[in-house]
Length: 380
Ligand code: GLA
Image 1 (tube, rainbow, N blue to C red):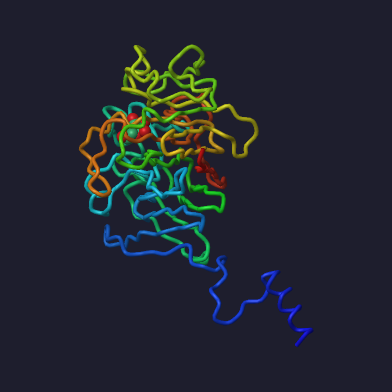
Image 2 (image 1 turned 90 degrees about the horizontal axis):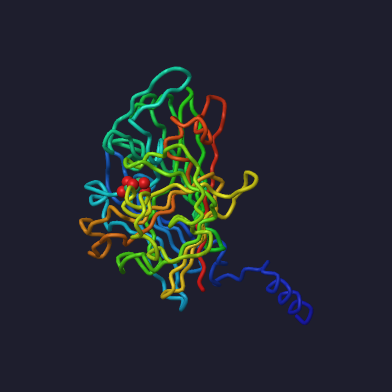
């Protein structure tokens, strides 16, 4: 007995002994669960809950890959849901300005809803005046993704797959896209994208959460402070299509190289802000190499919540929720008024298929597209 006790103590200390009747070690606790959210096109739609055991929780549906809720603690440790969205699937089906969705096949705008690839012109569905926006009339935000639950439920991981048929919304090639959401132990929501095609096509996948770090529905985002790691942006015309130039942010309201309140210059007399009705532009990220690089940092003084955005992409669309007008009644009956959410959409530049000088968005058969974006949360 005297020899067994020290042995038991050492096994307990190294964690290699699990006594019958004790709680399961936290590493095996379920961190992904699901409930039925509804049915779309005869397919079951689920609401998944991922938790990281550190106070962060993400609720994600396989309809549109939508992040329905993202719960993050504030400075005092109090949890709060910091993304705009709806309580029910039927509300997402009625009308949504892409709340929390995966956007594709081509996120952002393509001018005049057409482009030429390998000498052939492709006509897309125009859904933003004469232009196409966020994949067209029925983009990747409005389809049921196939959930892959092969990872054990002890891992806060959700894999989704969508096969977009050749010609869908006018785009060539059958595109097989996967999106993997992971909630990490370091309070990150990580999104890994991949895609393959059977014909040359164009592709720009992004994520469209509207963040309000004070809590969804708690007011406007104008006192949020933003840093964008970008010396240049892509100026737009009045239809929000890039002119093709890369313009220095120096001396303009687009300069977020040092952290600045979003509201500080948003109403300045400036053509770019007039065209965008506020901020709705793509910034050219300062980056070296192909790995994850810091794109943006945003913080909200009252709650103390802060978020960093890291990405492998060359650009980021900062959209200050200028089209929100109070017509969307969201979770808990909260009304989402003008500029009450902000989007930081990592991406290739808008209208790249018509701008040969921009980084290419062409994907060819035999190639594998990969892209990663991390939203990392902390408090100050
Ligand atoms: C993007 C666009 C905006 C707007 C929103 C959705 O961020 O750049 O102009 O269309 O999506 O409302």
